Length: 88
Image (tube, rainbow, N blue to C red; front, side, top):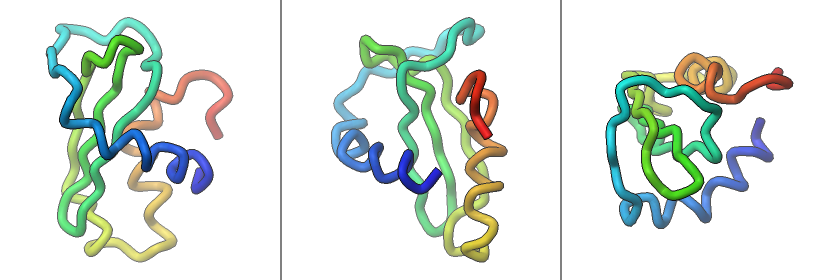
């Protein structure tokens, strides 16, 4: 999981340049997932390959509120069903 997160860091720098369009129901696995994880909040966006946000989720599980051993579980609670088949 840590390897996956580190590969997203370059993408996060440009997340504000992507268009946001809420779709009523997400019907496909996202092309990629953007995460903004601060000390007080965790926010995530399921992104289509064309840069449109398919869905947005958030929680109060910021990094400052969790022990390091709880990071993975907190992230998977928010994005786990977006990962598709084969996610452990």
